Image (cartoon, rainbow, N blue to C red; front, side):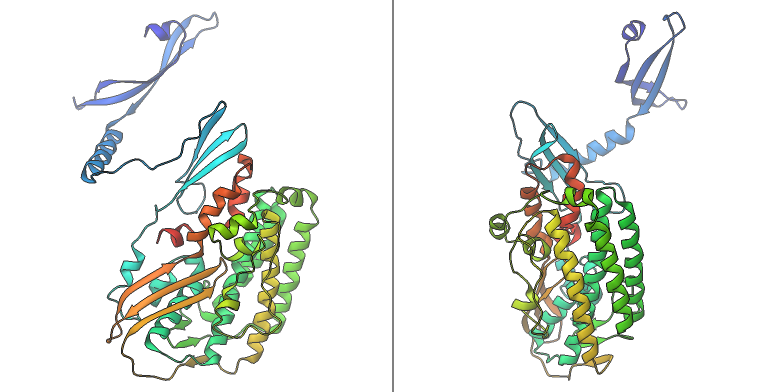
Length: 434
């Protein structure tokens, strides 16, 4: 009270308080003096916070540490030099996004080092596959990373078919390729709009969201699900209808208007250019995949290296040498156009909406499935016993290899550009944490 009498504010002073029910609880007091017109202290404003729940949580945490011998705090690397300070971000973020913690070491606004702490979404997914019937595990494969339902389920089905030596008809493979490209379309369109929104260009974001909604409704008409679930099974592919040429043409026109709106805005291009650069050498050394790799000049695409269907002689992976946000924006834009062309060609070749592979006897075995999802190469490896039951499943999402590259790209980037750089990578927490 002496400090308050001197006109000083007292924050988080811990003491004990007797409640009305006579229970004694630990509390934290914040006291602020109230002065009258002459400046004399006329009263005190007090805020009392009950510390009971916090103390219980701390006790539970201490119990967990004691129950895990050798447990230590996460090994963040501390950068020590004059003027360096740390900015912690997450794991809880604004909006409906997944949890991840980022620790920035900063001088002024320039990032010296960023360390990501992930694994908050570890669900034991691989273990959940064990003991399931190979065909019954499809819904689980579609939930590995929700926005990559086709990429993960297709990789899983290819692995099961490889293990059981199921011959997939070319017509089924073409239907699957259409679905994979539809998934690429709605995600890339959303990312392009979000990138523009992160530099304050809300008009482009609004256009992108309306186009994304059109694509999601198209997905629902094609498969019965907005995220394209339920259309692919081991040895089977089925759709309700295929996208019409007129629909694809309209989508292409609206997408060109969207990208034209963004690229004609000099402020947007200035913010994209030279931000969060990942060199080709770093991208190759880390082992990046997908958009991140191709935007750094690496010609990596599983549709070419491990094709499950023929993409056509004219197909070439989109590629940019810059390694910055602009390069990742441009690769996505080029891939949208390539996807529209590929869907048009594949839909034109389709002769059936439902195709099932012939039944063959199987004796179990192991199999590998690789697809080029919209984030990059997605890999599943399975082991199946004689009864068709899964005994092992190993999953690699492209985000697992791309997360370390984000930290490298952020070196010498300013803190306000972190959301932009992070969105240009747009990696999956769930796919990494499994």
